[in-house]
Length: 63
Image 1: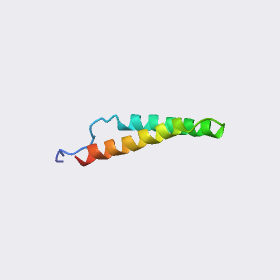
Image 2 (image 1 turned 90 degrees about the vertical axis):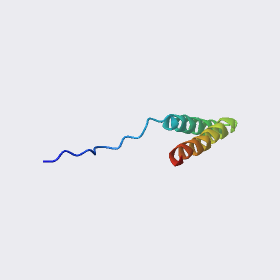
Image 3 (image 1 turned 60 degrees about the vertical axis):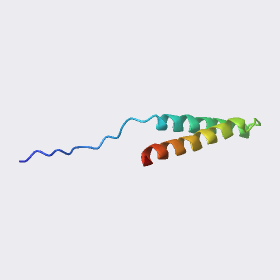
Image 4 (image 1 turned 180 degrees about the vertical axis):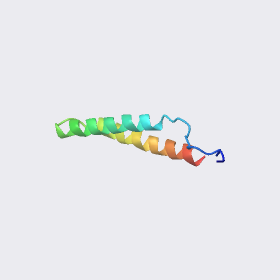
């Protein structure tokens, strides 16, 4: 049998999934706080973090 040079493609490690997880946590916690009469500021910060993560992640992938 011939040996193959292939194998699995492993992309470089990225910090963007962690940033996205923090953004989702903030948005969910902010939404729960908003439902209980709190302010919407934490939810907006979480949404901003997710938007930042999307631009950063796709910017890294496309370059």
